[in-house]
Image (cartoon, rainbow, N blue to C red):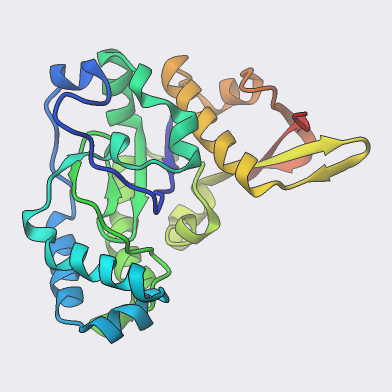
Length: 257
């Protein structure tokens, strides 16, 4: 069973030897679309400070930091993507506790969407960046989403077995890139709700944490089929058949105190 996760804006390239001890036992890989990432960074490096601020919609201090990151990209340190992203989902994912078997499983089943790299395997070497897939950057007259869609749809068709579904643990911002053509009908989107008395709420930060927790347990428990995911016990969430449809699964839990 294969699944996708969103990246996070918060990033920190781990020092050599940091993260999981098991990383040293497995060879790191190169991103499938590294040439495209370098091309996009080349386009960004041609922008002046004002253009960077307008494109990224950032204040002066963050604009300067972003432009400096862009200009230093070619010489920046690299690290495995699984340990570079530091947002809520990846905190919940807790890859530092993975052994070599977990990492090998993640490498074969998990894909991280990316505005700069398109898609990443957990052990792909990456550099820090701040480009979201919804950024207004135009590439050959296309939106960034359109640029990546034309590349990622064939990629995922090859990644998946015939008629195999793709479990979507990513945000709508990123999964929308894949919601086209034959792949659209193979996406199974997982939604999370918190139950308080008789009301169900979508709490953004808890949904991010839940995505990471589900990714963690798919890897740790070796969950290999969508049916097993429905019955798995993960952070108190229970599958709701009443709310769910074939392509949208809802998991509900009592709201944490």
